[in-house]
Amino acid sequence: MTLSELEKAVATLAPDELARFRAWFEQFDAARFDDKIERDAAAGKLDRMADVALDDLRKGRAREL
Image 1: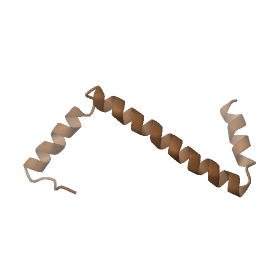
Image 2: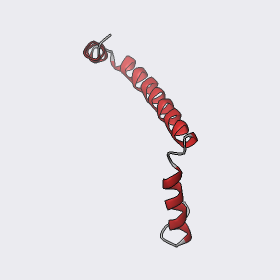
Image 3: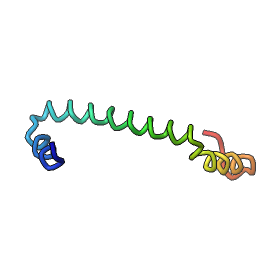
């Protein structure tokens, strides 16, 4: 299925089906985002940002939430 075909199919959904699709897609997208963050963290791609944030916290330029 192409993106154009998918867009057309979604546009024809009844309101209740669209709501179910939206809820499913939000969960699907969030899971993919979480997986990406986990892979990036495991690969050390977030280490520099964490170091900067911790340094800011130690120097009083940030506060704990």
